[in-house]
Length: 176
Image 1 (cartoon, rainbow, N blue to C red):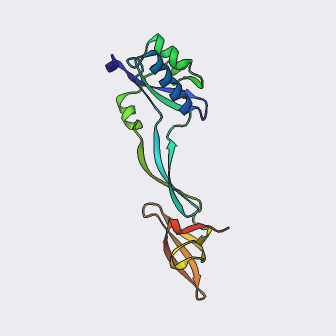
Image 2 (cartoon, helix red, strand yellow):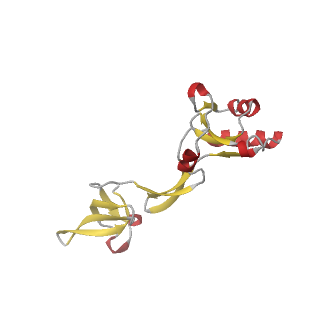
Image 3 (cartoon, helix red, strand yellow):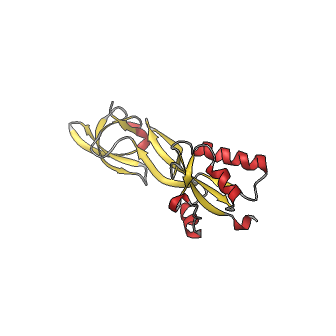
C-alpha cells in the first residue's frame, strides 16, 4: 500500500515543526498506521557559522513552519495529520492536500544535506580584531570575505603603513 504514498506539505505554528513531526510519528506508532503514513520529515541543512572565532556547524530548517508527510491520503490519514496539535493545515488550494510532484520532492532534497552557506558576524568595511596567528591583537578593516576559502582580507596598520593580510575566518572577530 505504501507505493501509493505521496509527499504532502503541512503548515505548522512557528517553532512547532519538531513537536508536530513527533506527535504524528507517535500516533502512527500507537495505532500501527505505518502503511498509511510511512514517513515524516523536516527538511534541514547543515550550515557552517563563524562565531567568536570558532567555526560551528548548525542544523537549520530549510522551510520554517513546514513539515513534509509521506502518506496515503485517506479520510483517516487526513484527520490524523490535520488534527495534530500545532498543525494549521495542509498546503494546497482551500487547504486541500496536494501531493508534491517527483520533481519537487527531488528539488526539496528530503534528506539532510550539507550546505556551503557560511555566515560571519562581520562584513566588508567593518573593523575587526585579529585573534590568532602572527597578527594576533591587531585591529584592521575588512576588505574582502571569501566564504569558499573561509578567509578574510584585512587591512592592518604595521610600521605606519596599511598592509593587506589574508586570514582564516576563525582568526577574525568583530572589534569590541
